[in-house]
Image 1 (cartoon, rainbow, N blue to C red):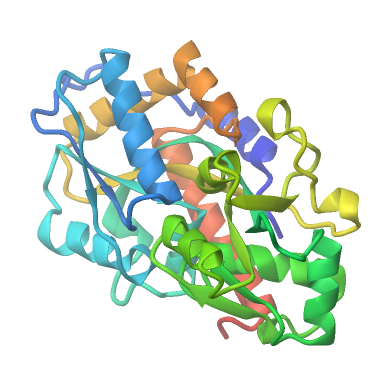
Image 2 (tube, rainbow, N blue to C red):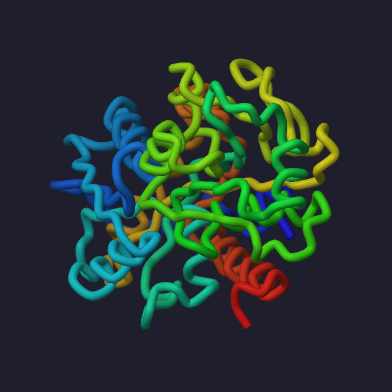
Length: 329
């Protein structure tokens, strides 16, 4: 039920993921802007800010990319803004992820569909995590899930996506893998972005957090939270080597959240090709590989048409998952 990143990356190679229109006129954004569809501190915010800085550092943008936080509706407010008001903006890109595909799959952006925008490319995949406050009495994932199994009301889990969104799905997948049959009994509380969700965890309003590694990293380094499970097939390396996987605790739950960008549906072909080229060049750089390693991102090399095909498949897959667990009919 989870995205097979390697399989899609191989498919991208077959499809020619990096192929661009060679004759397209080069477009240079005059006022580049990235919308992060959540409050500061979450994964979308990280994607906009880190990619914007890296594009400028690599000389791929001639001016600073403005980052605008536009929270609401699990990304729906930003999506509607782009579709309805900025459909011809050639300088605009928007951070997207598995959460975006999830909301589209579930029809949670009223009146909006995935074909109303243009899909630019991915910059990596971010593994999901489940975490608790550093001083929590919850020792590991199995203990938390056993508590939930015995009393679903005992633990509330906060995430940065809406109910039924990708953060919600991650904890439901873990619960289902543990043997909790009625995953709808799990208490999930939605916030606008991972940063706000962690803030509520630290305030004691909830007992656990579900999000992505890039969102959790800073809070782990500050000593505020403790990751009790990474939803990766095996332990990550480097700074993340001490974080246990769900699988090694007997919970076969894996979740990779892709991170990338979409653009307005009316963006010109020249502007679209230029943005696709810039993201492809950034992804291929050694500097971006360092960023990926430092933030726990897994490889996912998809741009242009291959990325669009990947999103189509993602939306279809999430729709199937959502039906299986009763989120949609």
